[in-house]
Image 1 (cartoon, helix red, strand yellow):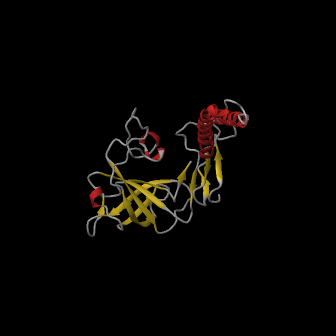
Image 2 (cartoon, rainbow, N blue to C red; image 1 turned 90 degrees about the vertical axis):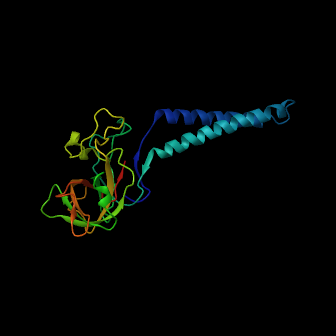
Length: 232
């Protein structure tokens, strides 16, 4: 997929209807304004008609922008993976339903979630071992890029949740469907080499914390490879 290419085109009938209606109103008002030339009361109506035209023009532009927003474009060149097999022309999709994931094979990243008691020991530059669930005997090496200062409000992927086979307990019935039960902080990790498979991978990480020690006694944080990802 090339950068800027439209990957998915969504259609919202209400947006199309409002945009078409506003466009008709703009054209009608423009015609009325042209017809005011030479009319006895033309100047008295001009200001009001121009005000209405500007309002409808703004509405039309807003709906046009919304239609463009529904054209989901690739923010970078990459490979489209994890495409929802249920997708087909004309199928309705929910607001939170993931459609696919765009990945850049040249840039691999792990998003690890570390508990509140241990996050202070994680520093940018710390060395990391990532143990993918599919191949835990051959860890991938990397280093910490950044540590979030605010706790994670919602997990980015369902497979991290215990409700979907992951390791992180979530709050059932909360405002966000993937709200972690415990206070967790995201740690971004860059891998030194590509992962063995080009899709999202669950696993665990060990992060070097205090001098000459590995944080979180045997791989406590849960992680997911994101591969410079962008979810649609």
